Image 1: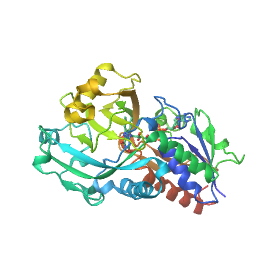
Image 2: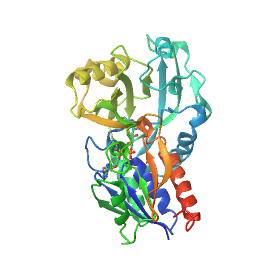
Image 3: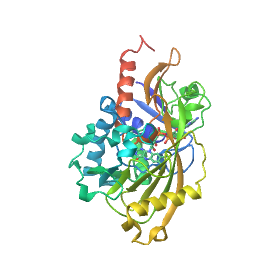
Image 4: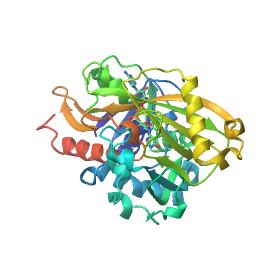
Length: 359
Ligand code: FAD
């Protein structure tokens, strides 16, 4: 009967706990410093848009492809998860695609992207449909998640499956060994501590750094969601508009600023974010410019960026316990959540099968 402790209660930890708990033999405990309901600079998940703008290459698309199937199922069959269908538009400028340094990884802005077969109704935009200043674009039926509904929904699903959640601040990953609600020593620790993996004892992954994302959440709504390949305000500043499900407001973004730890929203950046959004979509503010925006909150989240990409792999802690890592999702933690959690389940099953040999 594997005893599993998941460290971290962001979208990565909770999705992993949920999938692991579907096997009734697994006894799953989640321990975390932050839980759904908290808004904190050390907790990325509540700050996300969150929608599905594929960022992987065709070769590495497994995490996002698998996740899309599940998110689509939730949109269609589970309204209480707080996800809705939203048409998504991607606008490209040739000068951004040609530039060596870009704010988003290339694959999202490819003219013939791998994901064109994944989304329904994918099509290239006609030149008549393009906003002035953009050279090309595409549109597809995407989704947007209301993180304030979705994260508590994940907790509810975990609780229903017998997962126990506990607050704890770990100074070392090995402390999780003794934190199962069963009282037994953990056979497996899942490390889903996001950016925390930079400093967490026993992990201390120097490849981790923040990709700071500043946003403005407004009551105004407009559809379709839109993202552009670049802005005139420097490489760290980006432009996206995402309308969340179920009255969650609209997220205006933003920034993607590598290495910046600043937790306080910068008022100048905030003004630029709002100006860019209403310039692209004047209808968002009823044609009144940024004066027409009704602000709910200014936000900053630190995406858990990892040089070299996400870490999903097993590691032996000692003779009793294995660690399975699932961190470093940067700006795609939601859109890769189910695929990555499935990857963890595969590793956990592999370790469990080899018990006695490996443990
Ligand atoms: P986190 O949510 O940061 O959770 C980490 C957990 O580990 C927390 O519970 C924390 O308390 C715990 N922890 C850490 N250290 C310790 C410790 N020492 N002891 C105990 N507990 C610890 N993704 C998308 O897919 N689509 C989007 O549209 C999107 N938009 C984004 C927009 C912004 C502005 C930002 C900031 C992010 C966006 N993201 C998006 C990215 C997404 O939010 C992240 O990839 C995701 O939330 C990472 O989740 P996580 O569970 O790995 O980490």
